[in-house]
Image 1 (cartoon, rainbow, N blue to C red):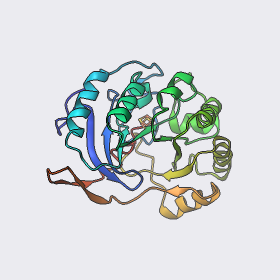
Image 2: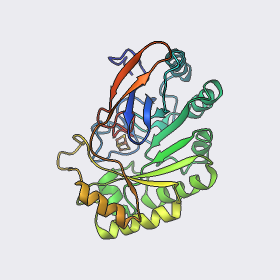
Image 3: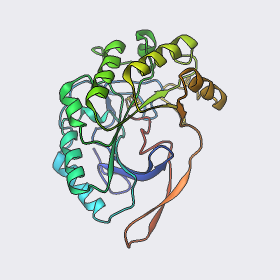
Image 4: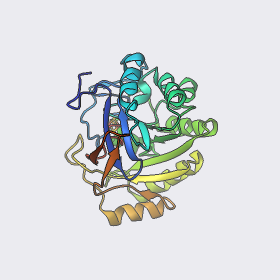
Length: 274
Ligand code: SF4
């Protein structure tokens, strides 16, 4: 993983998003390592399609960067695990979350994930101290799951849904389920009805809809227009819509001025990118 233009190796932003407010992104996964290869991914084609968890980057190095950044006491709403791959593939994410909550209790921690590894008890345990987990669920049938998410061969839609439901039962924090609408694939009445049933089974605190904001991996993927998103939200039983527009806000650093922020296409959110 190379050092970014901002000078940080594992951190990006802070950025502002309507969903998370001012959020510092933490990226633990080398580009582009994921258990899915979604047609809409704004990070591009998955080059390492894997379900193997390991310490892709050293926990100590990530914590050292966070220490350096947070010593300036920035005003942040969230520290957010996201980026250019699936963050739960990092076997040390639980240790990093626990250290953040112990050393910097003033900051809330969010994890944006594709949800495919949440069926594993050891992965569920890693997220116990997180304040907010946002898993994706873009399909409720195997056919659409294969078309939209193009998963690792070991992954199947029914197991993904029951894994999310199992996680919900054990996780005490806030769970926001996200559905990314890909017109023509997962916005049919049948798929939306199946998604509603899956969401009912999982029981998240909120259901959120999103759609394409900048070019996805496949150039035939288009955004859903606002009216269509509202219609999907209605069929899903009243989901919140998070799409369109890029708000701006400033972030304050204690005694050290401020930095103007914009939201670069959902970065610090999922970057579409997990
Ligand atoms: S959108 Fe997220 S889950 Fe899908 S391929 Fe990109 S990084 Fe992976």
